[in-house]
Amino acid sequence: MTQVADFWLAGQRARGATSLDVVSPADGVTVGAASVPTDEQVETAVAAAWAVRAELADLPAHVRADALAHVSTRLLERLAEVAALITAESGKPETHAETEVRRAASTFRWAGEETRRLNPAMMRLDTEPGSEARSAVVHRVPRGPVLGITPFNFPLNLVAHKVAPALAVGAPIVVKPAPATPLTALLLGDLLSETPLPAGSWSVLPVPNERMDPLVADPRLPVVSFTGSVPVGWSIRDRVPRKHVVLELGGNAAAYVAPDWRDPDDLAWAAQRIVAFAMGQAGQSCISVQRVYVPRDDLGAWTDLVGTAVDALDLAAAVGPVIDERAAARVCSWVDAAVAAGATCVRGGRRHAAFVSPTVLVDVPEDADVLRQEVFGPVLVLVPVDSEADAFARINDSRFGLQAGVFTHDLRVVDRATRVLQVGGIVVGDVPSYRADQMPYGGVKDSGTGREGVGSAMADLTEEKVVVLAVRR
Image 1 (cartoon, one colour):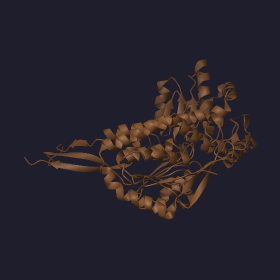
Image 2 (cartoon, one colour):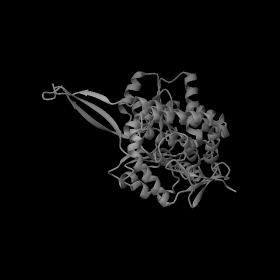
Image 3 (cartoon, rainbow, N blue to C red):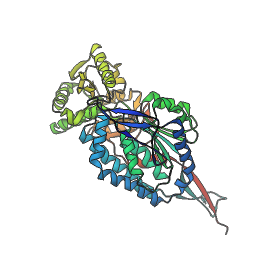
Image 4 (cartoon, one colour):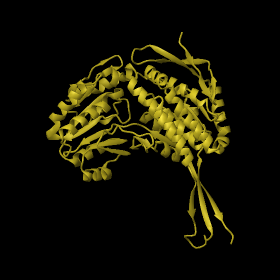
């Protein structure tokens, strides 16, 4: 009999009238089930978040910081258990799941530390006539309770990036995990329940997608933080224009290999990094390497280098399945369409159930989906360019703008990339797939709006309140 996990309603375990089965994409086996809250239970969670907002905001910083540090510690203590659950419900290879748990622990640790650093700023006002003997204290206060909506590809750390900054600034949060991977978020609730945070500070509700409209529209959740697909993200913002909406909507990350990147060891290392972060976790990352621009004369050498790196992959340990067979079929249909339009498939292009073989394409038409859209699968496209300007123009010729990688040793190239590339982040000397959980993270264009990263998210979830101090002399 399938074990059904309780959800978390205002910090307490609860059980609804129905449940949602969770199926492993690796073998199709049901690995568990999540209890689904009723509409009445969702209302209770939102009402509790609204009711506790002042109490949580006034909670001493050390209490919130210690609670976040406790979650960080407990994640590391239960690392093997949490990683196994991530692998079971998402199909993510074990090593990647363990890395995700460590990153989530770091995210909570950073949030605890930033809680203690969230200090008011003092501003002198006597810089203009009429403001003598006056100063201002600028406080940052929570915008209000947060609705956090998370995707399947990082079922723990992307939940952490919603929960930790919200609790750090004293904002209650209602988390809605992805239907495919709710169990890890529910396990995180076990750890949050061990803290002294007041009832209503947090809830984890595996609400079906088709029941989300009332939650998104509820005025008691004035902040919506969404990570997921472009159409859903922008539709949320369109439906609630008066709310503060943070969107992380993905990308089709590109890398450029500059002509000065010539040393054989550098080339081999770059090829290994590109393949590892194009194919790792089956390419299911917003900053997975999808497009690589190389000097035209070097295309043949790069095709060989990348092919060799693909051949060396341990598929079980590094790649794994995509989230389900439907996603696998969609990825392969895009590959087949590119080949039918004239592309050459150098490696891969096949699938078995939810597994897509690591795929490398060349000679891809400019309008192919594998170049224009977010593949979210283990697919890499090599594109020859005639100059740096050509490469940067092609990187910018995209509806997305999350991150880009530039392999170069030349600071002049770095300077030009910084000025020209239309992305939220540039990684120099490595793939665009690097993310440190404390750094600002987000994009432009269809990659979304707002920034994650603990400190940046805390700023995004708060607004300034100014207190003017007038001293009568």
